[in-house]
Length: 92
Image (cartoon, rainbow, N blue to C red; front, side):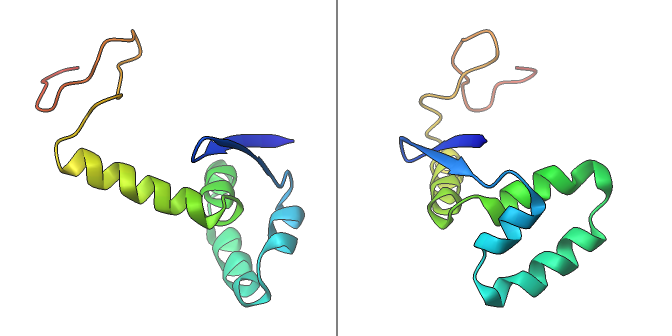
């Protein structure tokens, strides 16, 4: 089972393309079929999860994070070594 965290709570995601499609509202299933059929194999997992498996609140959370970063608030963003990222840093 795939899991992620959305707004601080653990969320279980569907684990197969069939499960993802089945959990979608009927009106989004044709879109799912079109998009997955046109997606290169190496990108299918990412597209299926990011565009169709994640709950709507995950999309809203991502939009809020991007807006915060665009506004210059980089608090809580870390480099791989654990050091804080600062806006305008060059090379790190």
